[in-house]
Image (cartoon, rainbow, N blue to C red; front, side):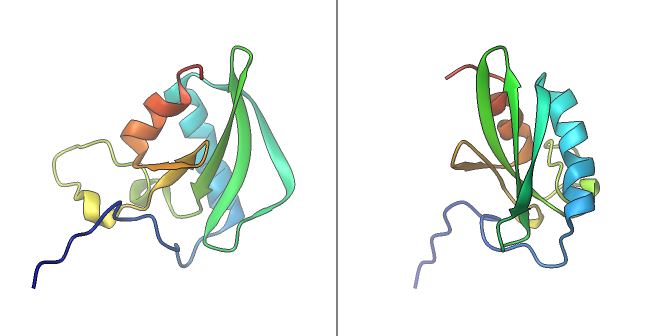
Length: 109
């Protein structure tokens, strides 16, 4: 039997916290050149991700950030990082690992 996995890391994230997601967002905003980070009153999506909004120019992006330590979320294709071990972020409804989420959030729609 052949098993095909699409979008590894897009499932629920256990052990996540809002405080960690907020810290991750500060780094993500810097990496992607976003500004005007906005927190929601109830950002918990129930799957270990937390919703934020940030913009680049006049374009607002919706970002669902995993609330795990940055070292477990920020996949940048560095030596020793296995993409299978990293949860995906969601940018405007599409799932990405960090390295590609930065590009997705850093462009205008």
